Length: 178
Image (tube, rainbow, N blue to C red; front, side, top):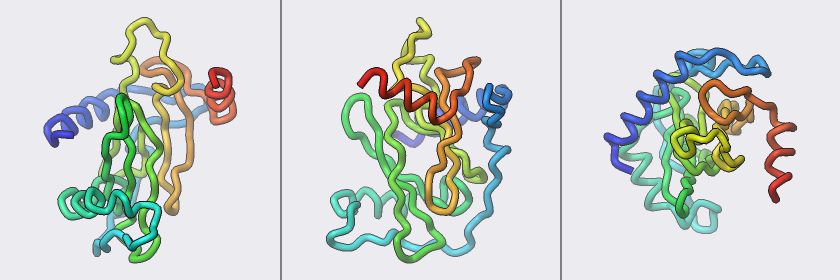
């Protein structure tokens, strides 16, 4: 994905998020609500033959080399397409030398994130996909906090101005269509 598009998407997402309040679950949905500490030394991705990320080693190494720290003060986010619409990828914990690659939640519409925050948003603008308000669950905006090398689900919503639902309600909605 071109760097200019990512920067524009990030700036738009940041502006929208700062304008939003808390959802029905009381979960704050701003990057400032999830501050992160910055890493001083950057470790390389832990890639070895047989690892579950071996097939993506070139993309991961290139992303680690060119992207630097992009989210949470110590993580490098690397994404790639996995179909239409689909994006996947990893975050690399640049403070650890072993077992430092974490799979991203799959997203249809990309991600929003900030260097100094542990908040990650999958599908940051679902309302751009469908103006009728009938957003399918695979396009819900999903909020995660990156904590100790795992993505902790916070809540999901259908976009700007909609109620943020908890994990139990979200999973029920997803299972209802499967």
